[in-house]
Length: 529
Image (cartoon, rainbow, N blue to C red; front, side):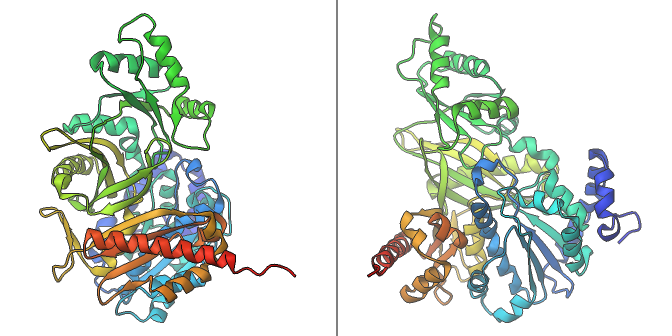
């Protein structure tokens, strides 16, 4: 390491606390300048290569209102263990709470051509022992001694990097504390990922997006926005209100406009305000008063809700590499639910070829703009596409997520297990042998019945019914968020098939078997004599 670069063992605990934001970013910029060299050295089989995984979800705490869900969300990243196929790579995986050993064994058993015990010897699990529903990065920064121990586990900082879920100033400070660069967006680019910021980016890039207004904070400003939008589009039937930092649709609200006074009429404003006060919140645990307080604090947008007889919600995943190049990774059709169909539940991969090529072109335009701004790592662009009377699909960009998301772990799981790649030209995922692969995934297989199962019960069901991934055929089921099954009756799964129909069949079969087994286990409980 160069002499002027901060060494975390000696200076992290006291120096970081004395640095102001400008000084922290100066040190962060020096760290990030090393990411190119780290990236180039990857997969060269160096014996001192390592990666530190800190799956910290530094987002609205309403998304993970309990410590056990926070832990399960952190465990969604366990697909990263498949990187241990590289025979010399060391991995440090950090979580809030200990991960059950059988869950680690389950993932290591998915590794093809690797002795699980050899991979396990190169994996170091670190837990904070903090069950609060706060972000993992926040917990780590409260514990400088633990950060110092993690730093000591890194064999060579010149060949190591940090992998977070999303990047804020907290993840920046974790990277500074460890003395390694992070593969993720600079926190200073966060405004592009807000609902207001991405609308401005879409407009600047010439990417079609819904009619709307940004940077709103009060009911009066929302009302002004709706009135102005109705003046431009009198037939508009509804709008969506979105918090700037809302996640997975939880920060959205639906406002119907049918039956309203005519645009420009004297009683329009009062009617609009009334509709806004009674907006339908997507989050079932948020009250209107709390929602408006969040709006006043962090701002948000109002935009037209795109409607049609046939409408889909695809997304495009991309990444920017350290050299500034933009890679198109995948397309997905999102599975949405919730009060007004805006909450993310799962995905189908790949997205329909009917519109995949067009949305990837728009997404690449956005990716190039972000690369020009110095973006790094994975991000996703969400679209709404509506089919017209002529059969053609019209896309609208609606969100930009400067982070990993709900489609990251299913796609990366498939990619790691098959070594395949998505081909934008054909809108298909192909293995090295040219075989198609398709998947359906969810984070929300939920039922009160599942609370009767333990992690061991789940794996027993997997073994007895063959709900595993078949390495020879490269099809089957991979479970995730496994630790939440008992407390929350919730588990995630990815179903892989050679066709959309096979993936769907495997997905439905896995759900059916799991729920039937859970119900049967309850019937088998002996009654006291």
